[in-house]
Image (cartoon, rainbow over all chains, first blue to last red; front, side, top):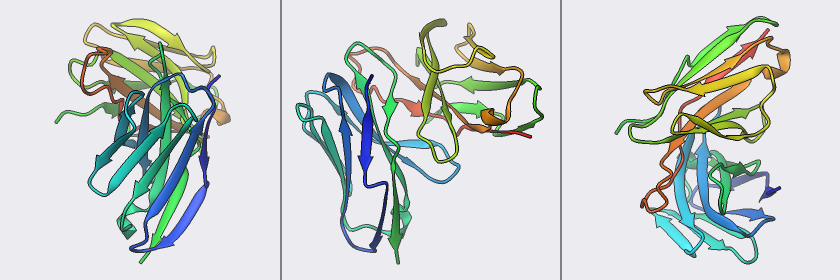
Length: 112
Length: 116
């Protein structure tokens, strides 16, 4: 069974600092990996999707890297803003499968 | 752009009652997924449908059932509700075309179920 771990569980930084969120997974036979943002009591917003053949994806201030062989992905958020405060979840899809397996998330607080 | 629509947004039920949650996927998406997210927990996969047929089953209790209809909307039926069923229930949709450039799962805003 795929286990997805996110470290740290919570992170608090001052505005302007860069954020580094880590995700690891036990089964490296993944098809793709997605990073999501979730605000309290709200739905999941997809941020970035990385195919297993890719090493990184970028969108604005967000950059996600993938090292499939070591079972790791990192989400970088540059120049953090208070509006970035949320829980960030990573989720993977295994080869031959379609459903997502989620990590527990990293809750980020950006202090103004 | 159209998103995944879930209804109702909030639902309050008593123990042992039944509840029905509805999900309308993004047009032309052929797969629907249901997830349950307890307080402070990560989303747990319940069940999925591909082209109106059940395609995968996760940790869904026997008290729950789901189906996908001819118009591709899906309903999650929950009976004999228990306090522990209180959670945020998400529906997501995607396309299984593995040649598609965008295979993201798109999530609805969820239904917050409270069992009293």
